Length: 121
Image (cartoon, rainbow, N blue to C red):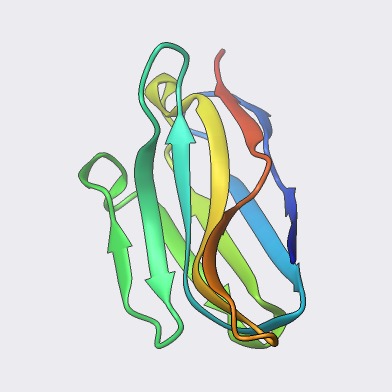
């Protein structure tokens, strides 16, 4: 199967920066998309950003110009550089790997366990 190691969350003041990272491991042959979603208390989970294995990126409107997603295919790792953070960015951030092909031929999506980001003074 697939396991994730997420890191980089924490408490930061408004206007500050954080970098999240998520490394996927397991019997992975390939991963098509990797990305981040977030869920704030009382709200639905929403896409933050995603990136394909070819480097095509998509950022949600609320984070455009502030967040940047990147990826190291060799390490099956995705990063989210978050700048100019706002209190509205406070949420649990979840790593996602989409269309993961395992060595046994299985193709599925997988989610990490989540990391808390809190933006507060």
